[in-house]
Length: 310
Image 1 (cartoon, rainbow, N blue to C red):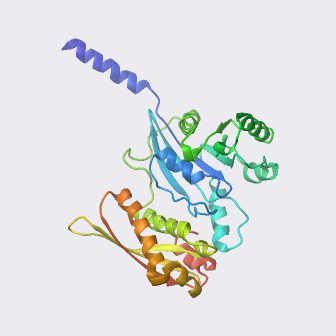
Image 2 (image 1 turned 60 degrees about the horizontal axis):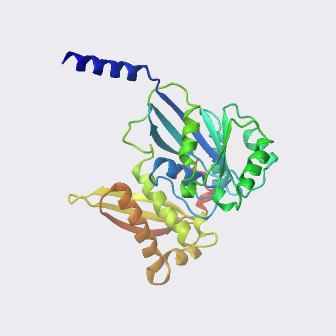
Image 3 (image 1 turned 90 degrees about the horizontal axis):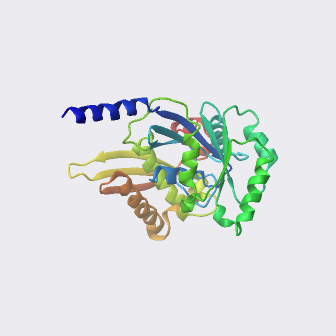
C-alpha cells in the first residue's frame, strides 16, 4: 500500500503547484457581429438570445466557462451604435462600461466589414486592458487570402495582442480563441461554482427567450418596441413549471401584429419559446402569454429601471 500512498501524494502535490487562473473578459462590438452567438458557442448552451436583427441584446450578460485549471467569465454586451431612444442610449452605456474593470477585451468585427479607424478610436481610445481582435464570420469570405488581408488591415489600426479569425456560427476557431484568452488570465480563484453557466436568474433568461421569438417572428419596428416581463414562475407538485409572462408593447396598433389572426402569432411565439425554455430548465413547461400596452415605455426612466435597462 505504501507505494500507492506516495504516488497519490505526488499527484496531489503536483496539482497544488499548478496555478489556477481566472478572470473577466468583455465581448464588445457593433450590433449583429455575432457576439451572442460566440458566447453561446463557448459556453456550449444557449444562454443569450440571438436573431438576424441588430440590437437584439439589451443587457450585460455573464457566461461562465470552465477550463483545465481555470475559469473564464465572459461578458456579452449590447452592440455599440448611435442610440436614439433612451433605451438605446442606455444599451450603449452598458456596452461602453464593459471595456473597463475586466482582464481582457474581445473586440468582435465582421469579416466583410472594412477596417474602421474611427470606430477603433471611439471604442478603444481610452482602453487600458489587453485587447484581442476577433474577426467573425470568416465563412463569408471566398478566399483565405482575404482573411489575411483583413487581419493586416485591422492590425494597422491598433496594437492588438492577438487577432483571431473565427466563424462562431460554425464553431470554427472558437476553441483556439478560448486558448488565446486563457493565456491572458491572471492567477486567481474560481469566482462561481462549476455547475452554473450564468449568473443571470432563470426568470431573466426565460423572458429573453420569449423576446427572442418576437424578434424572429415579427417585423418592422415591433421587436424594438417589445419587452417581456415574467409575472409568475411556479413549480407545481407534478414537476411542471407554470410561467405567466407579459409581452409589453408601446402602442395599441402593435397588438394586432403580436396576437395575429385568431391569435396564431401569439401561439407561435409561445410554442417556440416553450421548447427552448423546456430545454433550459429540463422539465415540462406550461407557458401563458398575454399582451399589454405601456405607452412609450422605452423613453420612461422608471419603466427602464423596472425592466433592468438602467
